[in-house]
Amino acid sequence: MASRGVNKVILVGNLGQDPEVRYMPNGGAVANITLATSESWRDKATGEQKEKTEWHRVVLFGKLAEVA
Image (cartoon, rainbow, N blue to C red; front, top):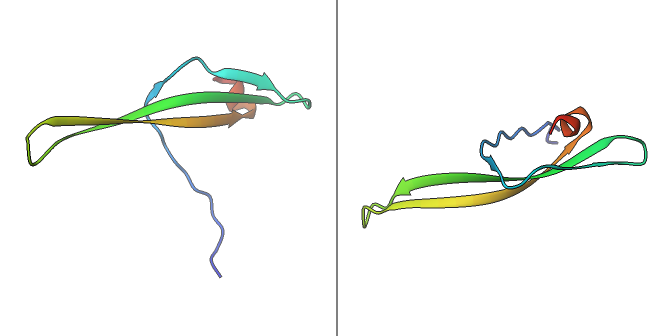
C-alpha cells in the first residue's frame, strides 16, 4: 500500500488581478487569486524565441488569505 504524503508546489509568477477575499460563516478568510507563470525557449528548428504563459487559479485559506 502506498503511503500518504503532502504535495508541495511553488509557483512564481505575476498576479492577474487583486486578490478577492471573502469570509466564511465561521469567520475564516478565503482568498482567490489568479497567477500567471511563463516559460520561454528558443525553437531549435527556426531559432525563433517562443514564450508560453499559463494561468493558475489559487485558493488561500486562513491567515495566508488575510495577508493576500
